[in-house]
Amino acid sequence: MNQPSGRRHLRVLSSILPILCGSALLVGVTAQAAVPPPPPVGDHAMGSQIRKHEDTGEKRSLEPAPSVPSVPGIDVSGHQGTVNWRHWWDRGVRFAYVKATEGTGYTSPDFAHQYNGSHGVGMIRGAYHFALPDRSSGAAQANYFIDHGGGWSPDGRTLPGALDVEYNPYGPDCYGKSPRRMTAWIKSFSDTYHARTGRYPVIYTSTHWWNKCVSGDFSSTSPLWVARYADHIGELPHDWGFHTFWQYTSKPLDKNFFNGSYEGLKRLAKGK
Image 1 (tube, rainbow, N blue to C red):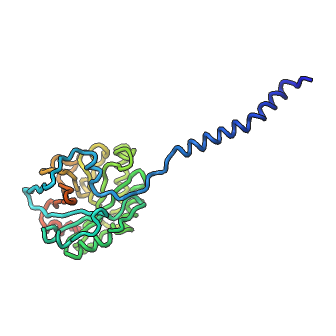
Image 2: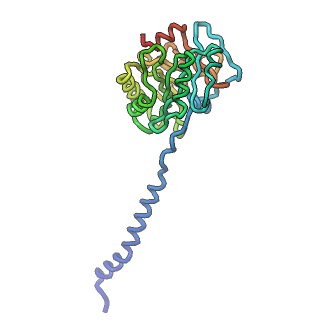
Image 3: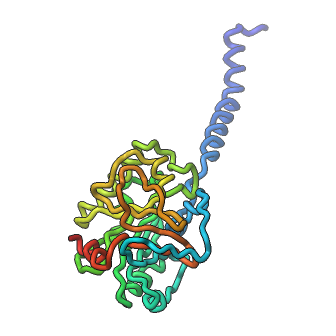
């Protein structure tokens, strides 16, 4: 005997429903699996991404002669390992910046001995943080930096911490942020650092990256550290009328000039 059409439809539906549900679940799982987790945080040195993205025209033995008083310095990270600080002191280097952290998931295993070693030979030293603005908030990264060696003390031998903001080593240049949102991220980092230490951070960047990715003005609070590997400093990022530090080469390691006298460098360290 023929079954009513409604009952036949119900039986067909009940037989294929598990298949449809299973397919939907499979699609959902596949879609979830297709989104990879963020890459693990590595050890990126100051300027490493600038050298990859910009035609720096860097020369191996570049030693520009600034026309104004200046103080030689270097910056190091885990890539340098053990540093012969006495060698650099004897060559006239008087300050050093040492990488402390990256994002909120990396602390340099070489930070303590590099930071203390530079101090031990008489250098004025500071710490720097490699920013990953798409991983966590500016405030979170400022706190992580301070909690892992990036603070400041008014001892006359400690420079304010430096925020290294440059090209994204893992994805889009500006970390998927608009200039307005990147400005807000940097402000969050800067304000948090100031609230905890009483100092605003030095900002390290390149003119090209900053003008592309940031719209805000930090020239009234943060000293500028600009990267340009050439025999002259060239154009500065928008709104800054002068620079405080200039990273001019990475060979054989990152070398810098402080834009001023040694007394001026000591005043920066003291916050006066």
